[in-house]
Image (cartoon, rainbow, N blue to C red; front, side):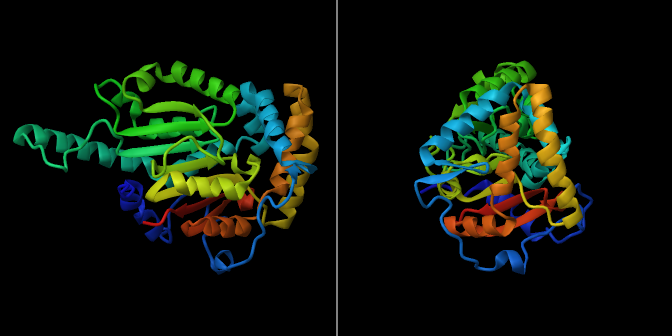
Amino acid sequence: MASTSLCRRIATTCTRTSTLPRRSLASSSSRLPFSSAASQDTSSSPYVSGPTTHFGYESVSINEKEGRVRQVFENVANDYDVMNDFMSAGLHRYWKDELLRMTGVGPMSKALRRRASMKYASDLNNNNDDDDTIDDSKALLSILDVAGGTGDVAFRFVDAANCEERSKSSGKDEVNVTVCDINPEMLRVGEARARKRYGSALFDETCALKFVEGNAQCLPFEDNSFDLYTIAFGLRNVTDVDMALRDALRVLKPGGRFLCLEFSHVQNVPLAQLYDIYSFHVIPKLGEVVANDRDSYQYLVESIRKFCTQDELVTRMKTAGFEGVKYTNMTQGIVAVHEGWKPL
């Protein structure tokens, strides 16, 4: 039987204290937590229910979409951060910082490392060989970042957990971060960035960071493997969102937590109009001028408009089996963070 996720046992206080005032990039005026509207049991049809689906505003076969999405990200892999700057006018960096804060990875890692250190010292002193001894071959906090090929979110976890400093010590890290992406070119860029930034110790010695090729709809991991699953700006590109949500639930440990940061639907009408003008008239042109690739940027803009509303994604997550589902709007709904827990 899989052990209960430490993410649930330690970080559950985040949900209990979410109503307390705090200074945040997502201000109280822009936050829309799980409310009566979000909790309504609205029906939703399957995300994919026939032989075709959408690729932006274009209708394509289910089998064709995955290849076309793969091509888009192969085209933009080397300029992915620049692309995100264009898509969000630079705000994606702040949204990812807020996602990190919401996960609680920093304080959790600090607490777990302290616990591991104290337990190890106690076992040495007492020659303790009981079942409660910490197994240093297993991580105490295991994080999966899906569709995170270039490492932008994963590096935030690595830094918050102080994995680079930990890599100067022997043995496997108590915290590990796995980046999973369907696109090998994105993974190539991400791993190269990581080795340049951190060196090889995180990969080869402490095993705190690794990059794995895999499809979000059928992840190459065993059941009940991770305490925390994140996906940032990737879920809308998955062919079958329902299938991806079910597989996210599968790979999480009981009590594990799911967080999705994604472009969503703007709540403020004047802002929505300005956002549409910027999206459809500025972003594709910038893609053409800077990256010589108007079509990829056009698809990315259209994919946002075709993706689930905030309430629809809540319903899909609950249908997949998540509990405690809620969302937080940021920047008036330009993006939203959806979160839920795997039942114990």
